[in-house]
Length: 312
Image 1 (tube, one colour):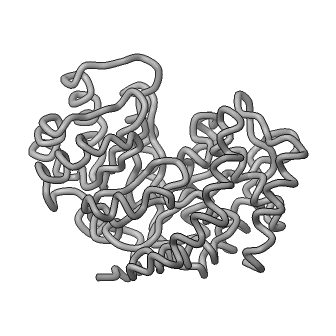
Image 2: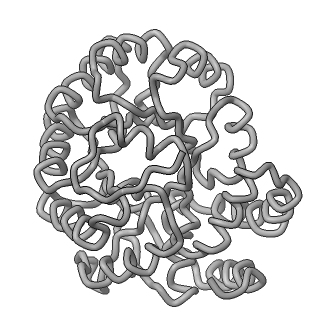
Image 3: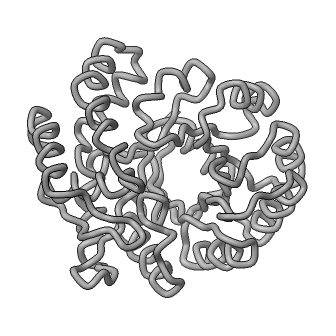
């Protein structure tokens, strides 16, 4: 079922329905040559992507370099995203870091009118399951809108922990997997059933889309939507329709060589997307340190990969 987004407010359960179908994506965050946030460029980017029909967008997410934004910029990014997409596409804001900081980001996103948050990892230090449960509970209880937890990095929740969270946090409505542990994901899906919306969140998720669909997770977030939105939607439509021939062709001709190029540098999962956006005429500027941009020869390799896909 497709949810038609017409109102600013969205209950957690309405957000869950949105996240159970369609293509999701993380818009790049635009920076100028001085690495300052470029609100005009960001608004133009969102306006460009609107007609392609993503079900929801994650503003200031991982691909949007949440980790490099200071609090004032974060508010600007979310505000611009909401103004550009209001009444057209639901916006989930990234939120993460230490518990009290994540709460501040979550509350700011709710104050600004976002439809929910993606709770990114707390970063750096390992944590017990009890600690992770307390962290997620504290963030969920600090807001009333929907929360999606991102299982990645230092945040690796078990099925039992997610069961506790499902019982104690009514507004925790989504689980995004960025680990790729098949055994654990199947256990989570079987334990929680339809309690959550399940999202595939491995880098370049198209490569894993078929496997996740077989495990009961048909929805994923696409980074390449940022520069080849027409192709990203064509892949998703083929994936949803069971058109394996089209999916296999795009994986073979584009995604596998793209991933090989992405894997040449640490942090290139973001850098290569910004390079792609620049190639197709929608530059978001450079990445911020500690990330680094692709080398000129790598940009030309990416250009050659994109060219056969045609106009986007």
